[in-house]
Image (cartoon, rainbow, N blue to C red; front, side):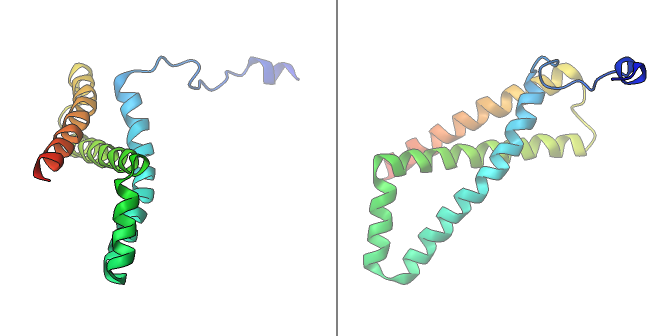
Length: 130
């Protein structure tokens, strides 16, 4: 290495930064956005099964009703709620509000708490409606 290369600063990366709620929620918003592609395939599969006939529809419903199927659907519900609330958080920022550090941190924590709460509420209502 030359002296010029050694004296240049290195770009900071995740090992340097301490994770803060807004950073973690930003990363989670990107991950949940990607996971929604998989969930949308499941919804499309279910709709195609409904259009394909009773036997195939019943099989897909059985599959979604297994323990693994319920875990996947529960995860999809959480991903959908988390991404939706993250989108609302970004919408508030687009309107020009919520940039203060303490408020942005509260919104990030509320996104996580709200997504868990909404997911549980949806599933509780779903089981009670059966």
